[in-house]
Amino acid sequence: MVFKALFLAHTPDAEPKKHRSVIETSKYKLFVTLVRNQEQALEVSKEFVEKQGVCSILLCPGFTNKDVAELSEAVGENVSVSVARGDGPSNRIAIEALKRAGWFSKE
Image (cartoon, rainbow, N blue to C red):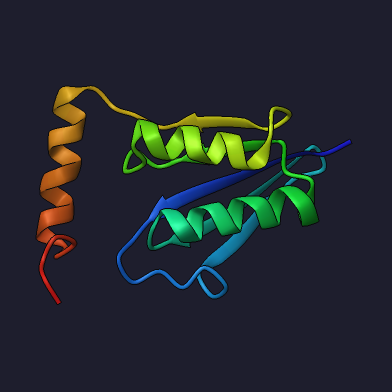
């Protein structure tokens, strides 16, 4: 049996059908998909649980506690939903890098 997980990350220019990949071994299959917002995250999560049998969803730090709860509710009690969070210094470093990359500019 293969353990299947989905990693979701936010990016302002995401196109979930286009920005996705798969990494796999004989025991592990990791789907990676970029999403623009919570609506896309919900849609993608449900798709991968239903069509691919994903049992674990890993989220980037940009997901709020409310987002996590909503995703968990949407995919059901048999799917783990976890968030990658850093400590204070790590979060500041990441925010500065995102600013330099133009993530927070108005388009």
